[in-house]
Image: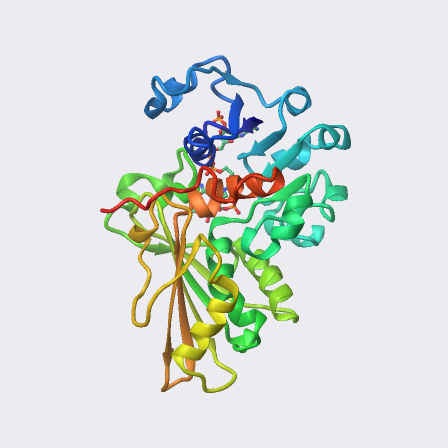
Length: 346
Ligand SMILES: NC(=O)C1=CN([C@@H]2O[C@H](COP(=O)(O)OP(=O)(O)OC[C@H]3O[C@@H](n4cnc5c(N)ncnc54)[C@H](OP(=O)(O)O)[C@@H]3O)[C@@H](O)[C@H]2O)C=CC1
Ligand SMILES: CC(=O)N[C@@H](CCC(=O)OP(=O)(O)O)C(=O)O
């Protein structure tokens, strides 16, 4: 059994880790970490865990945790993992960080976009970007994995094959994305109150959202060139789900079938990536509660632009599901163990 500790188990991403790991046949949660609910029963924080989880919440003592578990998930705000990690801890346990602390390779870019000082820059090079479909072999050997952001997972996987094969002019790429409010976490925040979100849709973080440099960096590796793009997120009145619509000019005239062949080259054997049939556009409902990424695309012959669409559940493939997929790779488990979650509908 893989012994697991979760720091931030009381947040939405941490809660989803608990839900998924409860169905994992090779993993056992030993530590439900919290800042606000120490010594309280976890099932009192999340009543859906009544008679399922009997444990009480513990603090975020990573030093102590490292000697008790094989892997630590940090599902905590930006900066916390970097402020706790050290060589001694990494020599005893593996870490999968759901925050952005180790996602960007250039510390000055992190500090510019996140507006905080990075507390452990020496581990940035070592950290592996945990996008399983792209970095599988490196993840298997990693002791520190930077789990990608939710918008970024969706945005990158949707465009990755075309960037990699040089089909699109990267300078024309525009990403318009929408997210349910669970993406903002469980903490009470005024813009996320029911009356502010219900019957409403709003853009935010326009030209400043911190997922922009992460998408640019990863698609830059794929394309083999520096990528600069526009990314605009929107908040929509639903609990879960992200839909990313991405526009780019095609370098040459290609048919839908030729582009589909490019997607198939990368994804045909990927269990969690479903490239949809012609004229089918993805919907968040089709992936809700699951680890799937659904991708669809259309070519507009008038503009010779391609419109790519990707849908994920932000808490599963966008956070906890992908984190467990990473854990499976790091520990030699079946990659889909614990993740055979059938999407919920309606
Ligand atoms: N929500 C999402 O869809 C996604 C989230 N993420 C990332 O995952 C991380 C967690 O996000 P999310 O679950 O949404 O956030 P929440 O606000 O729902 O949860 C935050 C968690 O962190 C704990 N925490 C907060 N401050 C501290 C601290 N100083 N020390 C220890 N624990 C602390 C909280 O504990 P307590 O409540 O007990 O005080 C809580 O368990 C973030 O980095 C986020 O960016 C990544 C992808 C998607
Ligand atoms: C709806 C909503 O507010 N979403 C969050 C994204 C959360 C996430 O995945 O981001 P990180 O792990 O990179 O912080 C946001 O836009 O800040």
